[in-house]
Amino acid sequence: MKHATHIALFAVLFGLVLTACHKPDPMPREALIQRLQDLQQRGCMFGHQDDPFYGIGWAYEPNRSDVLETCGDYPAVMGFELGGIEMGDAKNLDSVPFDLMRREIIAHHLRGGIVTISWHPRNPLTDTEEPQEWPAGSAWEATDGTVAAILPGGEKYELFLGWLERVRVFLLSLRTENGEPVPFIFRPWHENNGAWFWWGDTHCTPEEYRALYALTQDYLTAKRSNSDSGLTSNVLWSYSPNLDGNMPEEKFLQWYPGDERIDLIGLDAYEWGTEEDFVRQTRADLGVLCHFAAQHHKLIALTECGFANVPDASWWDRVLLPILCDYPVSYALVWRNAEHEFFGPVPSNPESVTHFRAFHDAPRTLFLKDITK
Ligand code: BMA
View 1 (cartoon, helix red, strand yellow):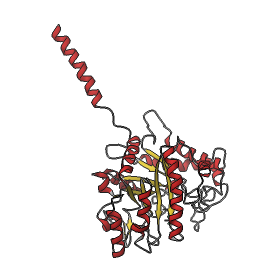
View 2 (cartoon, rainbow, N blue to C red):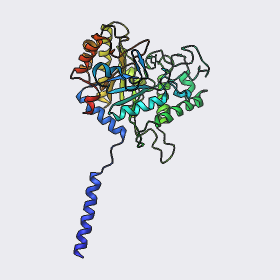
View 3 (tube, protein in one colour):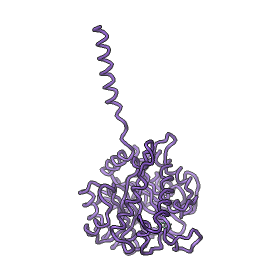
View 4 (tube, rainbow, N blue to C red):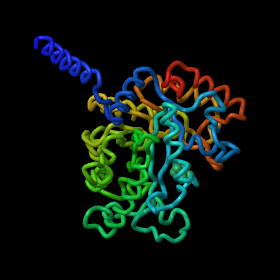
């Protein structure tokens, strides 16, 4: 009897130890936030939009990447774009097939990289579903009243829910072979302090904008059944206004969707004018946003940045790098290497290679190998 009691006691204790050792993994969302916070202590990740799809002089060749061919490593962060998914199109607005995009998103996740997703949807008020001449019907047809029209009670509300449903179905399909959801950063309704998109701040009120963000988030994260974890467990939400140069915190707060909705604060900062303006404005805005992010316990990133066609290759190590060294940015993502306009390095251009390698070799910048070792 005594012996049996000992065995039972031992079994209970053993069970307790096993349970303690087998804590379930944190959900991918929490794990990604923690990983981004840890990596931010080590450096600033480099990101590139559409990196595995095309580059300077090539398109849709497996395993190619201009960044890889320039510096011997993949970007730590890859950006992908959903524009067109809302129409049920097979390819996005930049010609990338969604099936291929899904494969590359999963591949980048499996190689240890970070994924971020943007969306330039068409204009739900002016789109005709027939071919239209740009910018008609596009994200860039910046009409007043479009946001109001897709909110509850608006004439395009039902249509817009259909668009969100297509986005939801695609995002839900981002799973590994084992069925594990790929964690990613989603940044809808970006650059809203500019006038060029229909969701820009000259085309809607702050209340309408915040309602649009909330509608999008609530729709995408709603559970449809008990067995459906929806998109609650793997999506990080970013709010990324455009470079302003004079972004008072009060103005930022007017449009900010709220601490409970946002994980990462981004800034989209391009050098379209002089270098001096770019540096001054980027530093000014990062100063304000980093302060806000620290107080609100949010991550911060340059969610888009770049200098179109990088006319002076020393921009990488002389202009961008010092900015990244001075602010706690999680990552800086440059836009795509498109045929008509590129923002990343050019492997066939010796100047670009020299300066981009210096940028890559700097202790502050992190590429894929740096974040996976
Ligand atoms: C813009 C440009 C467009 C592109 C869009 C979405 O900045 O690169 O050519 O269609 O982003 O990727």
